[in-house]
Length: 193
Image 1: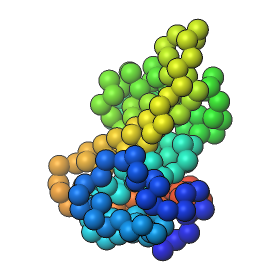
Image 2: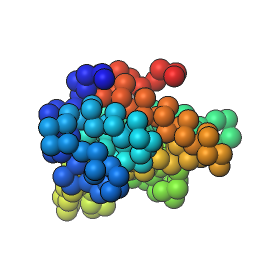
Image 3: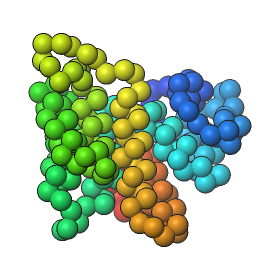
Image 4: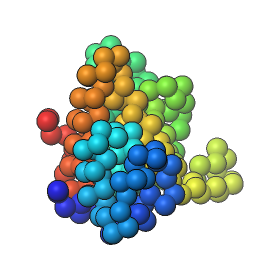
């Protein structure tokens, strides 16, 4: 298995402690299992939703948002609404410059997608990675821990299930997880599988 240079937790159990995973996924978790070993077990057992949830929460916020952007971008085409294109652009901008001023416009971008698309969830993952999720600049409300992972999870899963064909959905899960593994290993996740 690859070396997850971007994931700082040594044990998968530390990451899963706050996650809701399936019973099947919980059975696979060993006390001393590394994140890479656990993710491989989830993928080997086709527990793709659990694998995406785990990786979305294991990655640091910046890398997780990038993964969401890579997957959301894969769903865009020349017929995609401008709101989706803008949402991905703004989320990517936050990845390149992760400061609050760049983070803030992501909420409006996500809202413009009505939170129904992978691009919208990529944008909200960037917004939830900032310092303040309050609509008012006067009130500072830090995002609860794990909020970014939830949004990234939503973006990646929505991107995977854009088609109705179960074979395509499975192929998308595998492709997007491979991209996430690449990000976890220090890559950019943009390679074609």
